[in-house]
Image (cartoon, rainbow, N blue to C red; front, side, top):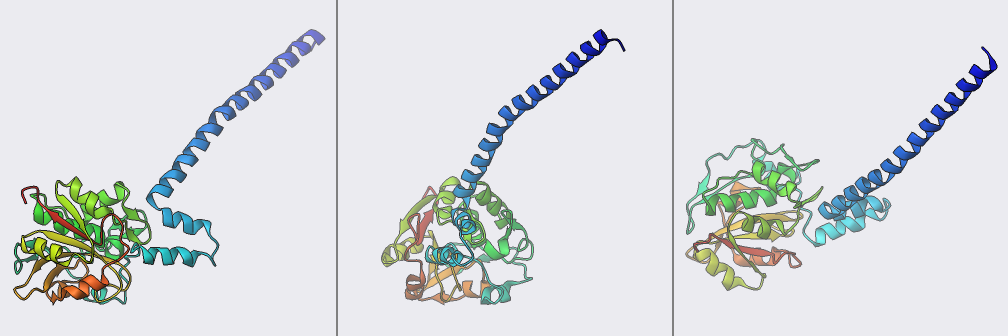
Length: 277
């Protein structure tokens, strides 16, 4: 190869190498901010949908129990335990077609442990059976008060897609008022001390969703539906974890004392009615 040709080939090689480096630099300049933006968006989404779970991941193993205490304090821990009475009673059962007719109105009943959907997902890692008392309670209300029959599977999907899943613990309290409004219902929050307001609402055929704390209905936290009042003033419920408890009449003082005192979103009781009420 003559010197002139060798020199020309060397120049071409240098140019190709330079162009390749330039392309890499340009690609890096483009990709770095894009990847950074996507990571930031993912972090914001995680914070919005699962703030307590995100906080837990940031803490050391010794500090993580603080988050568990916060979950308990705010009623976000609504996990049905395998040792809970409702779990033992409802596991493997089906409740298709169950309607309660002993109150002031007929109430469609769903159970989160129904074998048709107990193992179906509520979000990426939770199940309806373990964590779905919120969507199941809302499904009872919507199916009863509207012309739309929506089961716990569809309601859990809606709740997750709209950011109401408190991942690993249950549902945010705002699921109930926001969900009821989304499906065209009227909602009014009520405090535990407003006993007469709640009883009057039930007597008029309205439903009341309650977020309960540890006691007769749950070992942690639990959504359920108050569905009526008996002649002697006791409360009828639609407990999404227990048909047995749903067929009992309860003294209001039990429900009042065990309802979450520090509930968010206007709770611990939400009075819900159709638009015509």
